[in-house]
Length: 334
Image (cartoon, rainbow, N blue to C red; front, side, top):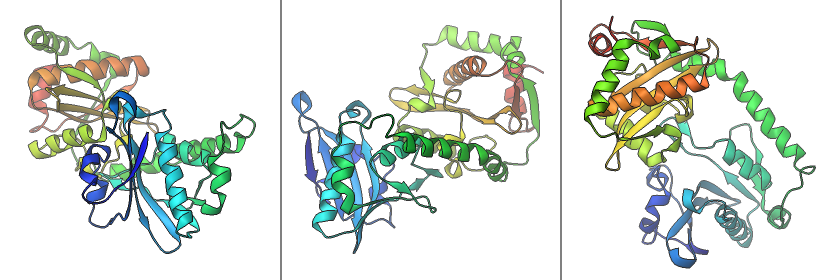
């Protein structure tokens, strides 16, 4: 592993480590940039990126990313350690992590929280995370946190999960404001999956065409999901939500929501949200550039939904007479 100080000339080589284009955001001027490269056979191949701002009394980190294939090899720890050392050399007092919001999605997730909490950071009321530079030695010189010593961290993570559950109703209320005033149609999940016309449609399409790559959106990189979103926006998607750009990625059920890919490009998305308050599945978007891809999306998502949820779970469909009804009748019958 090699850690490199980056500048504007060297940064383009690490473009793949910045899938959300954080470095190009107008309001963010990075003056502290580190890159991590692989060792061995993959020597000098970009593996990680850290972006931040050196200020008077603190170093603010805006982005820390490690390529999926390079994870669990201490790249993130090494990049963070170098940030601590740089801040200490500059006489700074604090490291602050401010997570960017892109396409409505604040890029901190439970794994991010666990990582920073285990390295001595604490959360602030405004959603940031901070650590004292003076605590560097005690934060970085450790082998493994014993289970007993990690109790406080586990308690905080549990508290965060409970807080997220309590905010679920607020989340649904907030996104209800974004929905278009279309008529809806309710149907049981299992009943819908067994509709003769739907089964006939899927079999007919897939029997004559080679299957596309299909999977859950949780397997996509940020760049790939962004590509799918832009496709739907560009083609005038007919989902519930007014704008997918205003919707957090984690609003959708990662297991049930699906994508299809052809020759390396996302060609369709089936986005589903599980409303915990009403205990129902809401089809937010079903869009594909190709009819074969559409069949793959439906087959994958319905299979995943029936494995994850009770067969009596209600499925809510958009049912606008002009936009949706022709397609619904063609695929699902009356």
